[in-house]
Length: 281
Ligand SMILES: NC(=O)c1ccc[n+]([C@@H]2O[C@H](COP(=O)([O-])OP(=O)(O)OC[C@H]3O[C@@H](n4cnc5c(N)ncnc54)[C@H](OP(=O)(O)O)[C@@H]3O)[C@@H](O)[C@H]2O)c1
Image 1 (cartoon, rainbow, N blue to C red):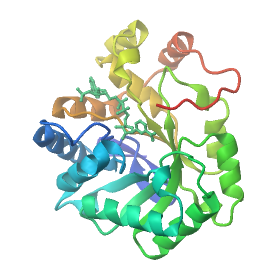
Image 2: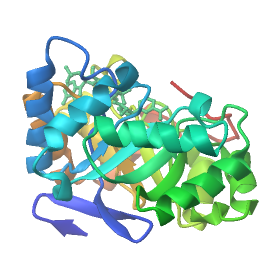
Image 3: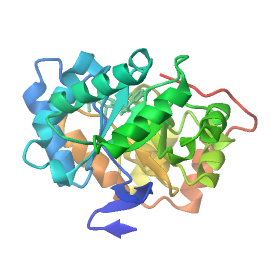
């Protein structure tokens, strides 16, 4: 579905834009004012899902997000992540959640993710996430960096089927999830959130992305981003500290890749033909 310049998909029953904004490495440095402005420009352009984590800058990114969304909380869908180190038992989880709420100056998190699996008791995590939903401190919960087996194990736990999203590494040069994780997520009606969807070091100067960009009057990175969100059920969360780049990123939703483009991209970045373990950054 496309409204205005943005396209939408779903997390649980919730309508969310296919492009959001990441915040890793934002919030701690001297560029803070520009970063706040960038997030606000992104919101104006429809990239209203904002992803952060208690880990990023040890809370600095969550504080930055709080500042950027002040006065417009109802316009955004806030995602933050719980560190596995803080997931050891109900008391620690509730206290980490409350600290994230305080830093983001909000009374609710729209999607609360376990950042990665770190040996915690998943049954207790799921139970506590459910309690946080009941207490209206979080609206939905999910996971990050979970592979197919982890998801199956999670879904089998009491309350585990309520998982709403799995945030994983996915871009043109990292297509492993297409083999099994993406189909498995689709089968469960589970949203997939692609992190590091731009990865400039691998993609910015790629000749095929550049060539396709030239055909569409777009940049190589816009082609990469358009490709990542080409199919339903996938959201990408590019991160930038530059308002100009935020505009470029939002513009990627207008790019319609043709069958020829997709075939050229498949040749340049072949899809996975066997199971690969989930890559992480
Ligand atoms: N769950 C997890 O374990 C996990 C792991 C990694 C990341 N994440 C999340 O995913 C988000 C995105 O991933 P990421 O930050 O690793 O990488 P990314 O978004 O793929 O790439 C970020 C880099 O791209 C540049 N960039 C962005 N837009 C650009 C544009 N239009 N033109 C040129 N350069 C552009 C940025 O520099 P400029 O600032 O100069 O634009 C930055 O150096 C993170 O911020 C974080 O929220 C989650």
